[in-house]
Length: 148
Image (cartoon, rainbow, N blue to C red; front, side, top):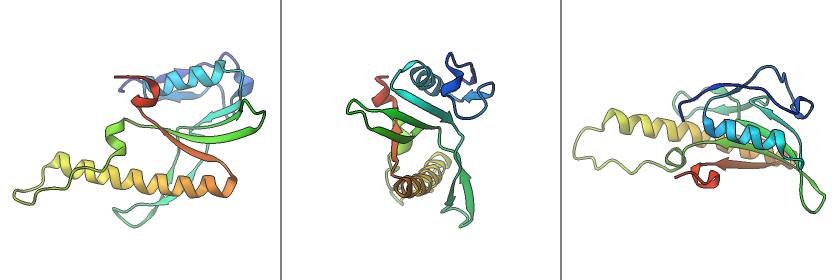
């Protein structure tokens, strides 16, 4: 997931934000952008256009979270639904295994714990943000994308 670049939409009128400055930070994000841009059920979409404040468990201070996508879609029933979407590797959505305590924790383990703590705080804030607006918060991993 290390590829990044600029996405040029085929349907720029569906994009909420500056359609000349759409950045993807992974090929997974790009794949979703292509789907949103080409899907006739997608009425509008944006990438990192919404700011959700969250309190970091690491420093106790408020920070700004920019979820990957917000998309407004017409469902098969005809209802219009808005979803906030975050794209992450499955491994980053699962709490790290507890440290055994017999040896010093590795730097990798400490990084995973910090990342999971921050992600959990962001996602909790995003769920509350969405609930206030009658939106849905969704995390998409390689499993949902059919990768691996």
